[in-house]
Structures are given as C-alpha cells and as structure tokens.
Length: 325
Image (cartoon, rainbow, N blue to C red; front, side, top):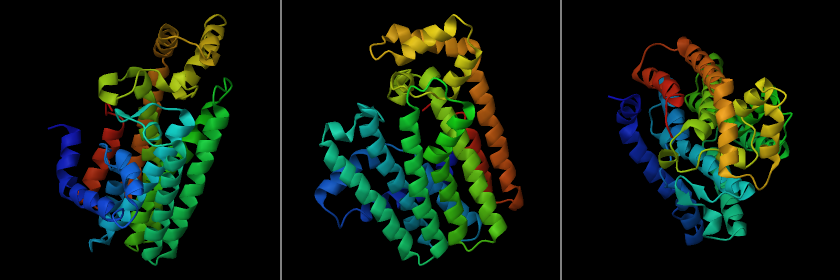
C-alpha cells in the first residue's frame, strides 16, 4: 500500500466530514459566492491543512467534534489566496481547470476571496478562544506580506536562498504551521506542545513548498495539470533556479539570465534553463534541503507519546517530499 493510500485510509471518514462542513459554511450566502468559491474549493485539493489541524487537535486529546468545523478555516484561507494569486500571476489553469477569473471577472473573484478571508475570522471568533483568533488574524497578514514580497522578487536575478526561504515561510509554511498550532490551542494543550506543533507545521510547510517548487521542473504535466517551467515562465526564482544560477559559469549564467528576463522566451529556451538546473545539481540540492526540514518536523513530535495520530503526522512529512502532484 502506498504512503498516500495509508494516509487517506486513516482520514477518509474525516475528509467526508470536512467536505460537509465546507459546504455548510457557504450555504447561507449568495449563489455567486458559493459558485466562485466552489470552482476551486471542490476541485480536488488534498485538504492537507484542515486534516493537519484535526490530527493535531486529536493528538492533544480534543475529540468533541469542534475540530471539524474549525478546520474549514484553513481551507477557506488557502482557497482565498489561490483565487487572488491566480489573478496576480495571470494564470490560465489551476488543478487542471480554467482559473476562476477567466470564467467570472477578476473583480468578482477578488471580492469572493475577501469574503472567504472574512469567513475565517467569523469561524475563529465563534470558538471564543482569543489565542486562536490571534493566530488566524496574524496569519492572514503574514501571508499577504509573502505575496507582496514574491511580487517584488519577480525576475530578481540576485535573489538569495535566505530571501527565498523567507517568502516560502510567509506564503506557505505559516498557514500550515498555524493549522497545527490551532489544533493544539483548541485542545488547550500545554504551551510546550502547542509550540512543538507550530514548529512541526513550519518545517513541514517549508518542505512541502520546496517539493512543490521541484515539481515545476521534474513532474509530469499530465499529473500536475501545469506545464514544466511554469514558475520560470512567470519569473519566479525558486531554490532550484537560485542554486543553478549561483553554480553557473561565466558563459552559462548570462544565457540563463537572458531567458529569465525575456518576455518572449520560447519553450526551447525554458528547456535549456531546466536542463541547466538539473545538471547543476539544483534539483538534488533542493530535495536535500526539503528532507532536512522533514527530519526536523519529525523531531518536533518527539514530545508526544505514540498514537495513531502521531503515526499519520509522521507519514505526512514523508509524503510531502515524495508526491508527484
């Protein structure tokens, strides 16, 4: 049995509950809001963030059902950022489907994204737990900063690894970290356990984003739903490319930089850069760094006694760097 199937089998019943809660929390609102949200919300996402929140809550002893409804916060937040990102990036597809702003107008999609963000605050407030409310309101600000920073970094050929790490923390890891942290807060877990879960999520999120960045260069487009080199074509410098540029010689680097900056670059040009990334060891280096964060994430769980939830959380870290989509 594959690692993915083992994880799915454990959370299958919970995934059905999450789907119902996601639909229920949208039902009282305008049809247009529901239609635009559902276009991506129910387009085959893994529900990683709500699943992590529920597993962490149960790891700390919370099993009263409140964790199901609260977990939807993290899927709404994630969906809102994807709706906004696709407009900013000028994307055409998401998860193999036409992006929302190509079906509805961008203004509508932005406003629906804003609605989802406000919905998360309402659901968080309903818990009556100030620490949870603080985490949710903080994470939306940090994620917005990450999006702004990525926009400013577009086609920045001098981008460093440290700057890249800061962006992926803000764009991806902070939300995964928050999901795990909120699971502990919902369970009223000791501060040491809440911190451990937050750090577990941070390392997992970094590893997850690094693996995602690798897929842009090595994955099968039929599986991922997007062409190889999409990030490169959009001017996003991710770790494999940053590493390759640092290692390139005095002839290769200028050739790569010219393609990155060229708005009219062809598929053949992108293939050249992708080949240089692979030959330089950029893929292997990024994979190594991702696995270091996986190891760190696993270590964070040492504070918890053995349990089925802990076992699945450990498996999720391995899945984060072994997936193909």
